[in-house]
Image (cartoon, rainbow, N blue to C red; front, side):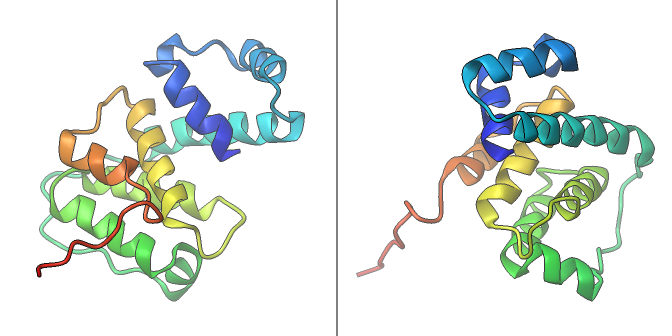
Length: 153
């Protein structure tokens, strides 16, 4: 499913440029994606749109998010830390944080890899017609496997 999400992000600059679900399924099938994955990706995107509509926009939040143990078990510590980093750097709003968490919890995987969380963040922004700023773009596109730690000496 994540390969399809990345394909959509790279192929369609904006979500409104994306064809309707039936036409999109045909295009994705023609490109060579599996029918089950196509269906899963389209359902995931539909629920992303519904989640975006259903979570109310919060005014300036001065509180902090407390994660339930079940959420931490599914998301994993690296994902929780990454989401916290994005929010504390004011790269995402509290509403966007909740959308990311909800969509991540909908995936049948625990813990979710950090690379998949990054794709979820990209798709959330894409679905809202927003571009990640340069700091976020670097964080989202640099793979943990590629990045080598920088030594001070």
